[in-house]
Length: 157
Image 1 (spheres, helix red, strand yellow):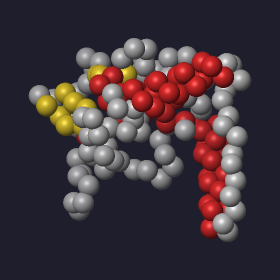
Image 2 (cartoon, rainbow, N blue to C red; image 1 turned 45 degrees about the horizontal axis):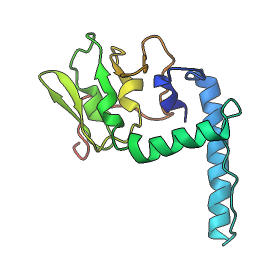
Image 3 (tube, one colour; image 1 turned 120 degrees about the vertical axis):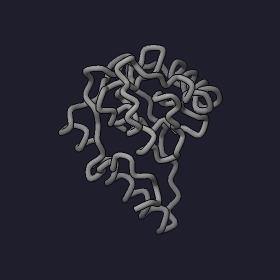
């Protein structure tokens, strides 16, 4: 998904908004197709694709490392530059409520699912992932129709 590419240390970097919309559109069509097959009881086994620039060995090694080590620890990689204003938008828009503002600095918890909303919506471009996840000056992806309501907590009106 384009939203996850913002922290990528190597290409492909986040696509432009037009390309991102095209990628999402293709994904939506594929999801509808797969949903229809499931509803119709059609069993399919989809080929596992991997990027051409990777060897199968490299891809599966990184996939297994991510699956069994990374996904449970990636929340530890989130950091903020000194430009962070402590505005709290990242905590407000986090769908898993995994960010708490402590002393005007966001702190992530292990419930983080790396959706990257905090990275993509930070008005100061202050959120990044350590180990090469530089985000300043990169394209940001905002989901169509998603409007963050600053300082509005989930469930309150």
